[in-house]
Amino acid sequence: MKNALVAKILNRVADFLEMEEETFKVKAYRKAAHTIQLLPIDIKEYAKKRKLTELPGIGENIAEKIEEILKTGKLSYLEKLEKEYPIDMDSLLAIEGIGPKTIKTLYEKLKIQNLEDLEYHAKKGNLQKIKGIGEKKEKRILQSIKFVQSTLGRKPIAYIEPIAQYIKSILEEHPKTEKVEIAGSIRRGKETIGDIDLLTITQNPEKIIEHFTSLKIANETIAKGPKKAIIRLEDGVECELRTFKKEEFGAALLYFTGSMEFNIELRKLAQSKSMKLNEYGLYKNKKKIASKTEKEIFKTLGLEYIQPELRENNGEIEAAAQGKLPKLIKENQIKGDLHIHTIWSDGTETIKDIAKAAQNLQYEYIAITDHSSSLKITGGLNEEKLQRQIEEIDKLNLKTQILKGIEANIRLDGRLDIPDDILTKLDIVIASIHSPGREDMTERIIAAIENKHVHIIGHPTGRKLFKRDEYPLNLDRIFEEAAKTGTILEINANPIRLDIRDIYIKRAIEYGCKLAINSDAHRLTDLHNIKWGVKTARRGWATPKDIINTRNLKEIRKFLK
Image 1 (cartoon, rainbow, N blue to C red):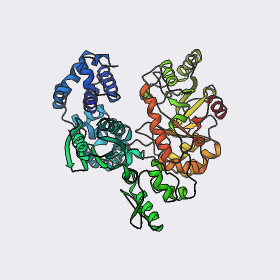
Image 2: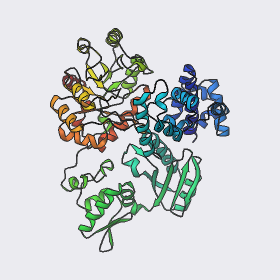
Image 3: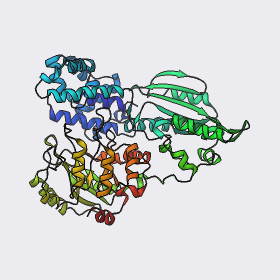
Image 4: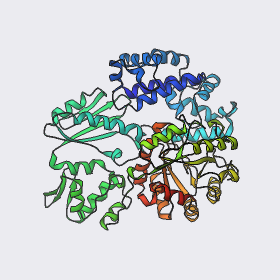
């Protein structure tokens, strides 16, 4: 399956074109790449049938380039751009505050080509001499370099899980396969993934292993034995397959789901009951007493079934022993999305198109929350534009109710950038920080929480996976104040944010905070981000009552008043 490769090359072309400020071409390549990333089948199938141009955003020109990539594994047009700018785009674009235009400037002024060059010049103080960077930004770049170096080798779950599901589906088609499950950190819903773990039931492991190592998606075979194998995929991700008999599969799935800390504690519990637990079963007096299913093993150990997302040795074993595990939130319990952007700011879709897509998702309501005008790079809404948007929403009469909202910017002094008399006209106000400063970040957020017009604090800790760490915040103060005022804290489901993170969700719930799982959608396909927010919420022990957008329209309107 070449989808990931094709999308990566098209996105890379867009990066180089952005350096040259080729706005129209950049949008075209980005849209084509996004379309391909979301395809459920191999892009080759469209190419074979000459149907590439039937896909959204793919015209004749880009279709020709896709065909070249599929035939050769590379693109001459990209190679031409790379010769002009011999730059390691992957590493430099990972740095917070650095985009293609800045990369071009850094290359032309300082001949910076990679992360090592960037770190060298940042430490020397050379970056701050370039117009538009300055001392403060140079310091943030150094912090981001350190953060990025600590996350090397991992990828977002939203990138890895679809690949794992694709490989799983291929293995399931083999006649000698009885069952396939994804294990490891993917099954536990972790936000970043290092590799893919797959387990299968089969009576003929050699044939399944042979089938696995010959997959077209495999770039090379790293290891191969009679019952397990490891392959490396085109993008460098490793995928391991282990085969088991039906009667031992439950124990195997439990063991290889992890986490390691959870497994250690579970084995200790077994030992305290004069039992032994490993990947083949639960034993007592050398006799296997449970192994077929995870539920059977948990029950034999005197535990409630522990959902995979909770298995981090964070008190879940003790809670399971006491019958006090939470009934975790499920994706189908979400009744609406309260954070969505449209073409009125930096989104790509109309309000009507977003509402229709939400209707297809069976949502009772959505909130349109475009950026406010002070966030200039988004083309946000001033008072006049916001009033016109309100009027447009009023004219739409769809089954899915559209709530009028805004994502207001929290200024350095904690005030919002939209006047109170405008905020009173809205159904919902999200307040977010988009410009971290030297000021006390906790006080900025507390000021927004105390604002009677604010309903939700958006992406509260400000982190972006692989780019920047969280703001320095006193979260206990924030949680205490949010619980006291009834201000909702967002679980931003954008897979690069997932903010607030799982461990903070659990703490926020303990304080009595209410939470909202929102997509932060900027295009139609982003509405499906909710899935990743739900996984994160489950890891944070969240139940439906903790998440306000599990409420119906009548209840949500009452809550927001």
